[in-house]
Image 1 (cartoon, rainbow, N blue to C red):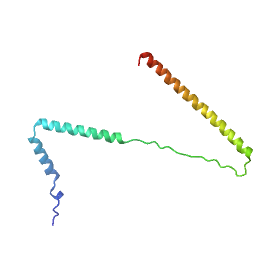
Image 2: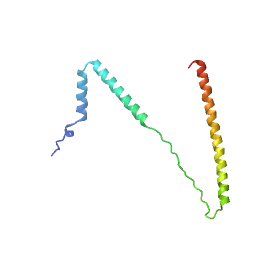
Image 3: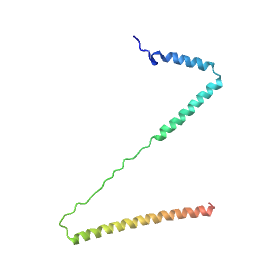
Image 4: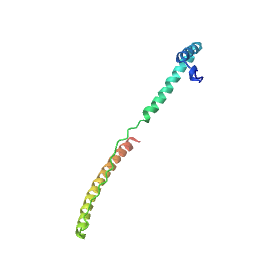
Length: 118
């Protein structure tokens, strides 16, 4: 006994022949515009597929923690804080210098654009 579902009556060769006969009855301009519309639709869909793929670089998030002795003296703690403060101050000076350089570059660009009337 054969199943009587929809796809049991479906034959790919008959479907292709049916489509070919239908398209033969259409005007040539209809066929041209059908092909153009299908190509445009596929181009838009392909653009979305290509644009949706974004590479996300793997970025490590490593957190280092110091392990201090429990019997440190106050003098050792203050000396460590002074060393850390000196490192932070140097880092801040470098950061401020980079910010000042960047600000100067933008100022030069703004002056050039102002000179050109923009």
